[in-house]
Amino acid sequence: MNIILLLAPFSVLLGLMAVGAFVWSLRSGQYDDIQGAAARILIDDVDADSPGSGTPLADDASETDDQRVEARRQAAP
Image (cartoon, rainbow, N blue to C red; front, side, top):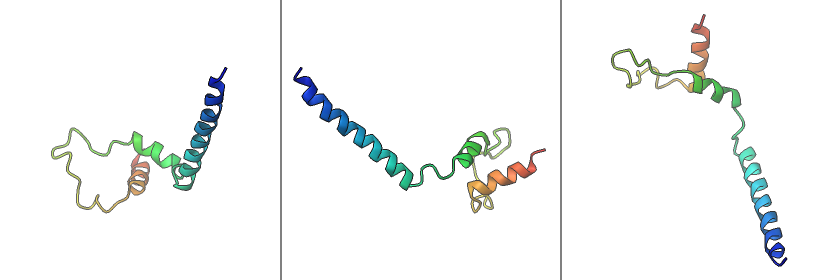
């Protein structure tokens, strides 16, 4: 029965840590762009069959991920 005196404060502390981690993730912007991340994971950036794959083009380096996603959406039939 004495173990409850140890486990009760420990569980409260663990709960407060979880709430603190959630508040930190909200403030740091972890949930800002949910749709963009979902679209980026599905798009293959490099065509494996093309020669020289693996080296980014110079003009692609200036584009952001969101610009590439939008360009591929417009190019898709």
